[in-house]
Length: 214
Image (cartoon, rainbow, N blue to C red; front, side, top):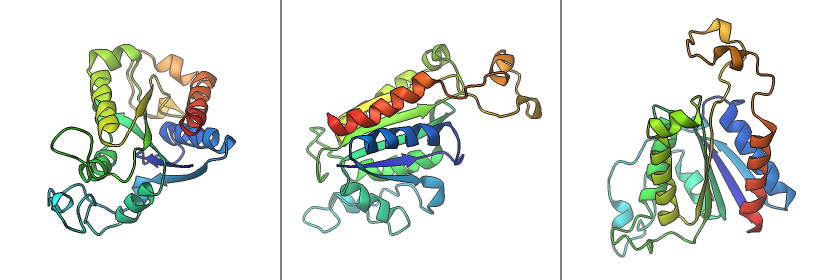
């Protein structure tokens, strides 16, 4: 089994990256082959709606034909069994880099009949991990939870089963006094020793194990 983790955060040591590496550690613990990719290391564009991936009886059917640094990654994904997507939440959605990536990944397999029988090479196991500064209540009130549930459904329909893990109330800065941050939770976050809770780290590790074993 091979698991590939795709990070949509520019912070190489940030919350999203740490959570994805926990998934990787979980997967490795049960014998999986793993790969970690940060999208900010690649030069690519979003989907251009060229529809080459929809041409009947063509070599391009079911494959994105843009020739950039995302193409080799898309090819390696097809050789994987598990896809784990990780992104911070920016303005209620995935990061721009991640949205451009998921547009390219998903659209090549989209079937307009809506039956989930598009040209993907196999049924993948997938997971979506997100991190956000806001609380669980903010996630619900601002519609973020609904957006993530819709994305999870899209991943499930297009790629295969998808599990969602949303980490809220994250610590953003090592020293909050250096930044403009006027949220009421500043004192609590400034004094928090554990940047990511042991419980959340374990949930993510266990997710990696579950994706490989189940």
